[in-house]
Length: 295
Image (tube, rainbow, N blue to C red; front, side, top):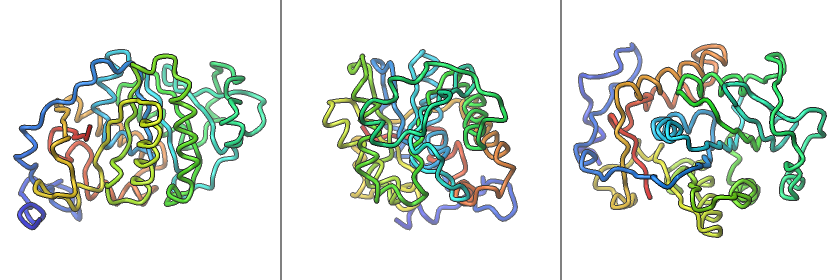
């Protein structure tokens, strides 16, 4: 793997203290394009806050521009947060306004699986003071990315705790996927189960179980794999790789979304997990002007 891992270039980040950006692999330029023409609703399984923007922001923006519905299941909270009082809450960002059901008792996973969410009102605007920091950050990031309607679901697991609650993740994804009235137009987007991060891999395995059970199309993104895999790595099924080419506008939107998320949480350094990861894989780069997925 040294043939690419050591290939630092002069086109670095330009920020003191940040590593140089490796040159994109030329092998990726010939990947077939990812086509999701029949996708009318996409369910995103995001292990950590903002994972979906970093790994698939361009794809989500393109699907939303074709009026596809976007659901994001956020599995963990930031390490600086305790778990929310509602272990699994379904929140929506509609025209950039988060909403939730009023006056309802905190839901447990058992309530969720029993269908308690069916009784929640479809839409209610909350005051800004009622928003927690993560909701405000997600709202700002989605707005910057150009997504005006996103339905967010939060499982509230601790960072690093997805594998220990993998059955709960399966149940949460099933609750969203299993009640779809248009399964033929549904796609699930999740991390690859061989990515190299425990939370990512557990999320990927859970998505594989659900999509196989409901016969729904699964698309997987690479994240940590870019730090250890090479174009000749047998561990990665490159024959199943597809790309979404990013225009300069889409790359700029991803940068803006990342910046908006960070700013909403109090600026750089507020979230150590994301700060370290972004220094390693700057938003919009990995791997070059494209997003790569496994189908």
